[in-house]
Length: 416
Image 1 (tube, rainbow, N blue to C red):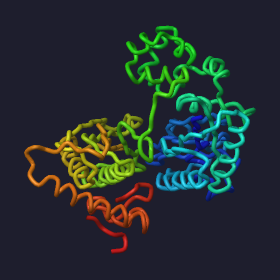
Image 2 (cartoon, rainbow, N blue to C red):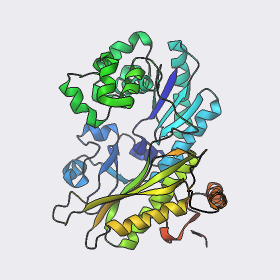
Image 3 (cartoon, one colour):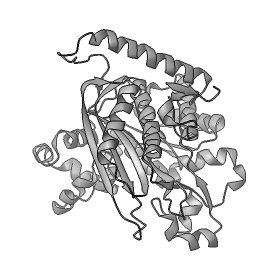
Image 4 (cartoon, rainbow, N blue to C red):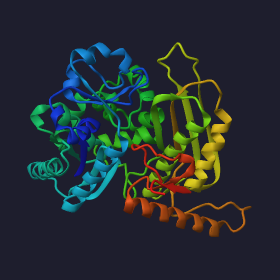
């Protein structure tokens, strides 16, 4: 069966590893601060119990935070990525899970050649206990015939205490489980589809699974059809390479303090570009488009508001950080406006393809030789940072100091 492992309250759980004295107290992780202008990104159950929710702006809930002595911790993305890699390593070393891949920083998929529910539950319990013992991160586990059903099983494992963090969704229980799951909660059904589903009376995952295949394809296309097939027990989603190959890679950040200078903004966007491009190489992909976006603080109605984004299509798909940073700089020149305090910015690498084959530019001479030279450079940078720690080598445009929670990649050494 396909298995799904989901870390519980991951950002908060990571912070509690080094601050165990906070266990039992309401804790939130937020991209603080700027006059309490941050957003709650994650929270533990005690924080939920006092009425806080993910996505709450801090400036709207100061009384709740003060009254219940809520601990507010700044987000540390690099810490979370490091712990996620440790979980990958711990599970792979057991050799219990086949085709184990990382779907996101706190989610993983794999396969176990076992269909007997009790035996499978026992193996998942071993994994759950091992991850907790080795990393101090609590996880929930689900198993099903397909990726979507395995993720559905984890949904129930997290919400029903009787499952004790493990749910095996066997074929005979599939219809009952889908009947209890809202259609909008199904993995693969996007927010844009919810309105159509409501209009057509599709309330649950079972309603969706029982609709005619022709109707599903007409309304929701190939992606919706794959979800329909997966809910009905037919595997239709595949992951390539060492990790789940994504359609796009996005790195964004809501800044602790608003940024007005173009140089500072380029530095932050370059950090995102380096992190995204390294992820691109890790999953052995190339990108064809680069998008950047910037936005002011929409919660500060007293300030001038501005949002913009722009996309550049590259002549040749690439995983070369120098090209991506150059594209980011060009795009920023196009959309930057003086006088606005920027609160959020991000980089998106799109139209991803496998690095196994590249469509070359017919009018660019010596392209193969140049691409190989750049690949050697990127491999050398990745090797140094892998051996001596992230951020040891980084591009000069990233500044003298690279943020601890941003992965770094002509470059300047912290020790130089």
